[in-house]
Each structure stands twice: as C-alpha cells, then as structure tokens.
Length: 113
Length: 114
View 1: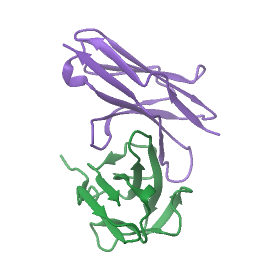
View 2 (view 1 turned 120 degrees about the horizontal axis):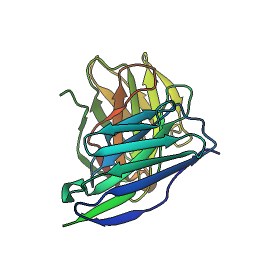
View 3 (view 1 turned 30 degrees about the horizontal axis):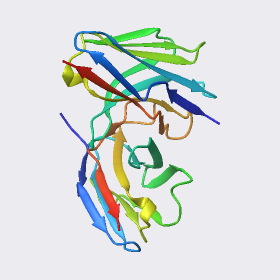
C-alpha cells in the first residue's frame, strides 16, 4: 500500500540555523509533491509544490528538493526564526480521480531563540 | 486574498446526534474536499466533490456521512449519528480545477462528541 513517512516527529534547532526535514514515500509514482505548514488547531497552509522534473524549488527562505529515484523530498528552512516553529506536512496525491491528498504525519519543528 | 471559511469553529454534541459542518470554498473553485484529523494523527481524506456529486470517498466515509452543495457557495458535511470516534478536526479544502494543483484549506471545525 502507499505510504508516506516523515522521519522525525520532532526537530529542535537553534535560531539562525538551517532546518532540514525529510519525506520518504513508497508505492507511489507522484508527478509532484507538496509541503504544507500546520499551526496548532489550524488548517494546513500550502507552502511549496515541486514537480517530478524539478530537482529543486525555492521560495524566499524555503527550499525543496525532489529525488524520484530515492523516493525522497527534503525541505529546508534557512536562517530559521522562532516564527517558523510549526508542524510541516508532506503531501502526495493518489495520481488518479480527484487527486485527493495523502499526508505524512508531519514533523514538528521548534526553533529555539 | 480569497480563503476557505468554515463554521462553526467548535461544535460539541452528544453521541447519536446529527451535526452539520459548513464550508464556503473559494468562489471560482470547482473541486471540494473534506478531510479530518484526529488529535495527534495524520490529516486523512474523507471525500471529494465535483459537479454536484461525489468524485471519490475513503473507507472512513461510510453511510453516516453525507455531503451537499445546497447553493452556489456552501459545501456541507453531515454526520447523521455521531460516535465518540468522530471527535476530530474537520477541514474543508477547495481547488480551482481537476489538474494537480494546490488545495486551499479552511481553518477547520473542532468536533467533540460526548
């Protein structure tokens, strides 16, 4: 069955450092992959989408890579700030139908001042 | 910037009661979704809706659930006879078209079944 794993449930880093979050998947052949941010008690907020033919995508301090051979995406936040503290979710669609999303469990990032 | 809205933000109900959760998707979007998130767990797909009918549904979406788009703006999720295990955050999402695009999520309704 299809599976998405985000390796760390929690990640603590010092302010100013780069946070790197990992998403691995099995039994998928996604054409693209998405990253969302979720704050406690709130809905997921879209951050970045990367397509299979894009090795890397950037948006301000965010960078996503996508390796379809390794079946892995890395999500980086550079110059991290306490305001970046949240849970970050990796999401894939099922490749058919209405392209509903399957989410990983998320990595809770805490940026320590 | 347009956003998905949901009401109520919180709902407390007794087991066996019916609840209706309401969503107003982004106005020009055509695909609508409901997801739920049990406390501490993943966001899970429930159902998708397009052209006034269900497109896909998960195994969670059994006969006690129904969805409706009663007018041009609202999208509702009804749970006919709530169970304790229905307690969760329920998120509505919408997207512009069928293509593989970003889904925009609402803030959620926290449902507590006692």
